[in-house]
Image (tube, rainbow, N blue to C red):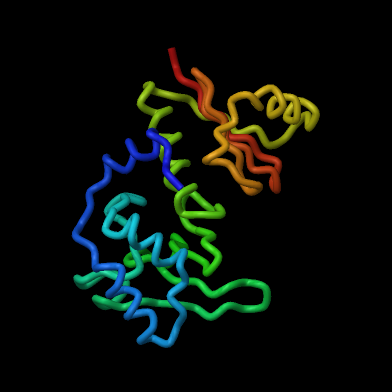
Length: 198
């Protein structure tokens, strides 16, 4: 799958270190006794080495392992968790604090910042939408959670033409209008609205 121009533009804002080769990471996974799922290897091939700022003095280094000492794991180390019940096995990101849940499941689902979503690519698309919107200038935020449920449904219905499908899933829908970025989370019936300030 190819990413949108907005997602590619956001990626260019990130620093990137030289990553371990995908073949080397595949061997690390096999040597650790796990299956090197195709979706994991694809993620590493496409995104390894990107450095995302996830908070003040806090970063996540994408990929499945790093060549250098990581903050949260040894170099050239992969951390895989066995699946439990209906949940597939997961692999941790090359370097991120566990609180951020930078994990990729064997079926490609990403759980960390920008997720949960069906793929890591969708996480990148979501950041691309936010990046594009905030380049427009200052914005004010409103959370629409309580009040008239019918009014909330009408707002989402009226935004339908502005749905950003490549950034939206059953978990969260993204809408981008000329003056608004709207994020709707159906399971908690919450709408987060950013509006550009004049």
